Length: 402
Image: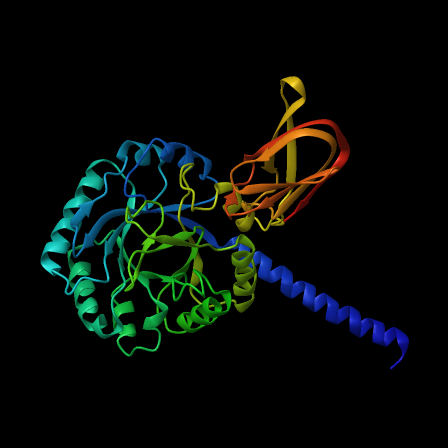
């Protein structure tokens, strides 16, 4: 092959690769983005969170009713004036706990329809009802009957949606369940085991691909934007702690999902070009006090394909008598684990100490702050690191080890 011909072939191959990547990015960008509001107690922080998220999420999916074997029926007192003012389309989500031994179908439908009527009477722009039920695979026929009866009682103007579990894939009863709903949401985040964490991108891709070829109707994928704690309180088991404390004594193992992990999954998902995949639903809308949820800045960075790198800065706040209070600040676009180590070159130090998640090691020329416990620092926020009283702090002599 002549050199010019080889170059032409190489150029064509490179063009094809770039075109494929552009097409994947375009599909990823075009996906509809929605979000779950899952807080059981509404606070004034919801107003700020909704206002700041208006340009990110087209639709809100709001937990309105929960049915639990021990707690019974629990209606969530949502802020209806705030949601009416927000104006975005919303779904009423009903959570039927998977531990329910059986579904009291007439009672559940009655409570659901009564709540729906109250939401509509308050002027909320409800476009659908979503049933979130982690049914055991063996009970899918029973679940299909419940959905079939509910569909007949719902107003024809409303959509009926369900959440779906990867464990249902392969069940001969799944097609019958999916036929009762106008759309579905595949949940690819769960605690399979503490070792596997909350999210496995490789498994999630496989599940989404399999589900896309089974679903007869549009579906979306629910992705995690949060962490949780597994509280071990006895030898038999553990309890999940997320946005609220479970208020039991025991050791807590924190599980989290890295933003880069989810961003990588989204890029790969876009290349599959799955039929009937209409968008992404994020769990959950973060509030300022929700320490386990990603910040809205992090969610925005992942959705907008921004570089997900931390940018650490050590701030020196001068105080009287040569004292400096120290802060570690996250200037990057995403939440990140606190740095493992921070070093400050300084001499003739009279005293120093670390606070919070760090301990201090000192030499004649340096103060080293070593992380002793892990935690996340949200994008744009800072946290006390410690303090120094030194006669000489070397300009530019500070380093951070992520």
